[in-house]
Image (cartoon, rainbow, N blue to C red; front, side, top):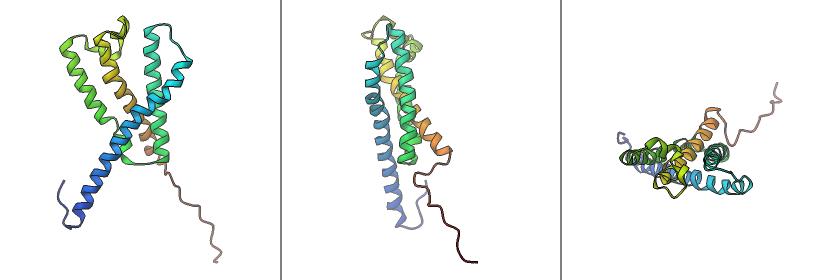
Length: 166
């Protein structure tokens, strides 16, 4: 990024960067925490009989609720940061994947199948720490991207009446 020619423009650029970073942090927290909050009443309704069913339930809830949140938030509070919510959780997931490589059975840790022996298994914790945040954030970003790509504006312009001048 080149420095602007106008010295008064430079502070505005810094403010825009800080504003974007703050919005991104808020959106990430919202994607991760609000999804979990909205999931909790649904988890009380559906009680899975096996760990595999519980994993599927978590995958589905994370994707559907995350997508819906991203879609609704972008419609009501449009900003460019919502489309980039996936980025930091993806880096966090990459860190978890590299860490899982050192402990073996990376695929089972990432997909959650390592939880078949129970949630106390150390390899199962990687799924909750790394995969679920990525699922929620990527779904949130996909919902926000869908609104943006459809060209939705939060505050549409008022329709103008035809003029009476002839």
